[in-house]
Length: 143
Image (cartoon, rainbow, N blue to C red):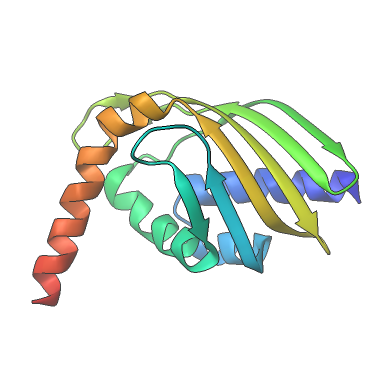
């Protein structure tokens, strides 16, 4: 099961990176949560619904996708740890290169929890303003 979980973990990261919500949903348990660790503005706990919504909006902020380069993937029992680097171009044309470590817990072959580690300062600086723009446009469209 560990090897299968590892494949699902990589599939999830690739799907999120290219804003593929259907594949993300297939990888997640219905009660999945993501805990983005750190002290930046983009940290916190996210529900299944928020993860799916974020995936859908991701292409507006990171149109190239993260283009993950996987460094390591280690699976043991119901946990998988994946280290990868992203190499993206943001919607404003700026490069975004961050390093990540996702530690995922599985239940019945689906991701139940993700502990996400990344440089929160870089994310706040580069992605934060773009997310604010997307949110502002979404609110304007609703009016």
